[in-house]
Image 1: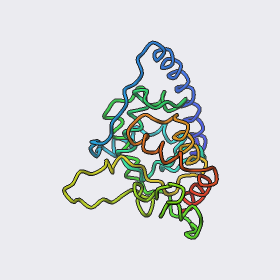
Image 2: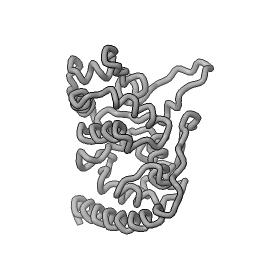
Image 3: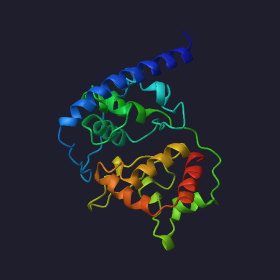
Image 4: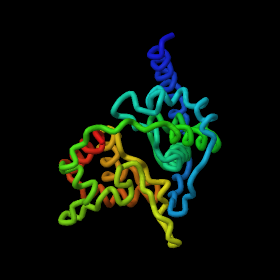
Length: 235
């Protein structure tokens, strides 16, 4: 079989399995209490076995690509992403704090070690190559400096000057959970718009980081979201 055939088969199997698991999860959640809110302010960096994770990522490749670069713009790129961020997302899909028709079912059978290994594997991959971003664009300005007049903070404060995550300097003082913040460079404009829309609507309010993003998203208009998506997707 060709790589394309394998990926198509894996995608079909993933969707079918996710549907079955999601049906079961939906029935169970109807009687289950709401998932607890996750406070990530003391989230420690996550580590796992990247080699073991590579052997567990076959189904993931159907949507996120064989090298962690998504096969369609509706899915996030995982290559080079923060292992801690990836682990937290998988854990919250599994525990019901975050819901998705496919990912909730895919995460349901994963053990804690599985989630750590998958996170470590994708974090070890080379991120999507940088593109020819327009550093004079509205999106670049919002990312680097925000828009104080409209209450928009600069994205680089949490996501790093190059959108590949923050690089804090230890100073002995209490620090935010830097490792749990996602890298944004190279994510598609469609995926970023969906994520910001979910924060703005309250669909993503599952942890303390999401609550911060809810406030940020409320300051962004549709044109701001489009500008940021266009900039980050071409970085």
